[in-house]
Image 1 (cartoon, rainbow, N blue to C red):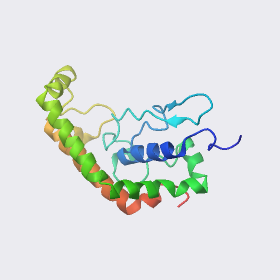
Image 2 (image 1 turned 180 degrees about the vertical axis):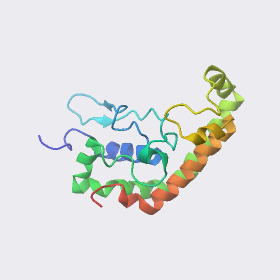
Image 3 (image 1 turned 135 degrees about the vertical axis):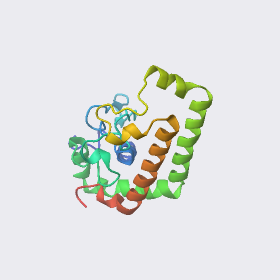
Image 4 (image 1 turned 120 degrees about the vertical axis):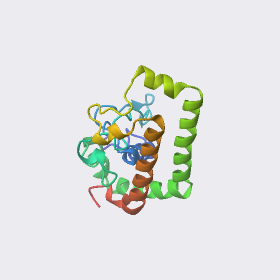
Length: 179
C-alpha cells in the first residue's frame, strides 16, 4: 500500500491540521505529534495537546503572527497537501465549522473555562506554583511582560483567537502550499 490514505484517517487529519493552524501551534507535526489507533485500522492524529507556544505566545517566525500558515512546511503536512484530494478539505471543513458557530463556541469556552479556573482557585494556585505572569520566558514574545494578571492573559488569548479566526475566514484557502 503506497501513499498515506490507507494508513491515516483523513477526517481526523483535516481536523488536526485545522486546530493546529487555528492556534498556530509551533509544536504540531514537529515534536508533539502522536498517532492513536488499533491494528488493521487507519491511525488517527491525536491527541491534540501542547499549546504552550501557540496563539502568539512565541516570538519566533510565523508562530507570532495571526496571518499565514504555521504548518505548510512541515514534512507530514507537505505530504498531505501533495494529495490534490486533500488540499480542499481543510477549507471546506473550516466553512462547516464556522457555519456551526465555531467562533462563538470557542471564545465562549475560553471565557467560561477562565471563570471556572478563577472561581475554583485553580488559576491562583497555578500562578503561585509557576510565577510567570508579567514575565517573559523563552520563547514568549516581549508583550508577555504586559500580561501581569490572569485576566490579561485570558484577554490576550481571546484577542489573538478573534484575529486568527477572522484571518482564516479570509485566507483559509491559502493554508496549502498548492493554492
